[in-house]
Amino acid sequence: MRCLSFSQEKEYEYPNFINRSLKQVLSNSDWIVIDKSLGDLNADKMEDIALILESKNEVLERRCSSCKIKKNKARIIVVFLKSGDSYKVVIQNNTFIARHDEGGMTLHLSPIINIQNDLLTVFYHYTRDFQSYTFQFTNNMMSIFSAESMSVNASTGNFVHDKYDFKKLQLITEEGNISNEESKVDVLKLNVKPKLLSEFKTMYDWKVLENKYL
Image (cartoon, rainbow, N blue to C red; front, side, top):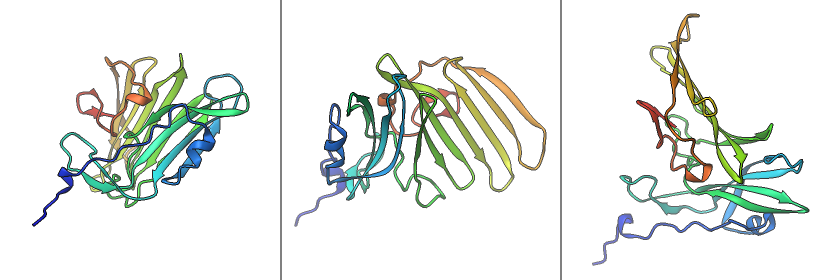
């Protein structure tokens, strides 16, 4: 009798797209583009590209150290810089982009990416909440520039609105109720080193402050 659980099976090996051209990435039939954005990221007045790719088929993934291996459609973010007439992947992250079933009450979570003012933003809209991460390209690396979180309690209407500034290393946190105009605002100091996009694990894995995760 043969018994084989997912925990005994081999996790999926993500493709390595670093230094690949746009044509090479798009020609990989195992992956489809679910969102893209074009714009200048490194202030060279050339139009760069960011793509979010999703595996065409479900693969075996372990999304956290304590998680069980399960089948899911994997998602990858890749960033291309333009040089001359060609594009080349300079950044890839296989774990950071949330999977479709990681949105809680949102049945199908879809990431939105946008390049504007030399910044790359990854945005998620939940049933009542939202989360965004904004990255800046400096010294051939892309690091977190800012982030914004909004959560609303469906029963009470209480909300928490957090704005992270990784240049000033501060968090502006606002708490209140959606039915009231008054709210409480605090400014907290951040004592963390801004992370690179390539260093991010899954969402909300990074402890920025006590009870504050990105």
